[in-house]
Amino acid sequence: MNILLLPGTNRNGLQWFAQLQQQFRNMRISNHSCLTDNYSFWQNDNAEPSLEHEISLLPTLEFDLVIAKSLGTLVFLQAAAHSLRHWKKALLFAIPLRLAEQTKFSPTSLKLLQKPNLHTVQQRNDKLCPCIELNIHQPKHLLQIAGSDHKYDGFSLYAKTCKQWIGKL
Image 1 (cartoon, rainbow, N blue to C red):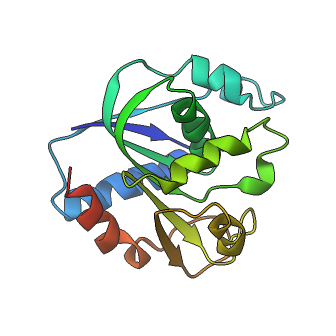
Image 2 (tube, rainbow, N blue to C red; image 1 turned 90 degrees about the horizontal axis):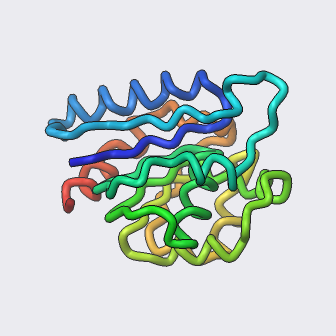
């Protein structure tokens, strides 16, 4: 299984993905190769993220699964909405709608949330987009978890649901 990992704006988020991958190994979700996208703006501490630029740098492979967190969800949704990348399923964490305007994110991309092959995990009171704001876009699969810090460290809150959903690949 080919997996693309799209992190948030902070390089420290890579540790979250490492922990998630360990959870997958513990749940016996294996036989996969993961490719993590390293954003170009990480090279310059003063650079602002550009969705358009980061999308242009994404690999052109077909992925069985895309796992994205925070800014990575906006990169994925915008790329997928414009059919710029091929993917079978996506697992999105921490969609930061309050960053949409400053990143020039196209809100029409949110229609993808209604697709059956896209699963979203969102904190009920996420500081960058509480579930009530996300529900406006009628996501087909939305797992609401406790929290507001936009960190999503409580893997036990969503690990089983994600395993069941990923297991259908």
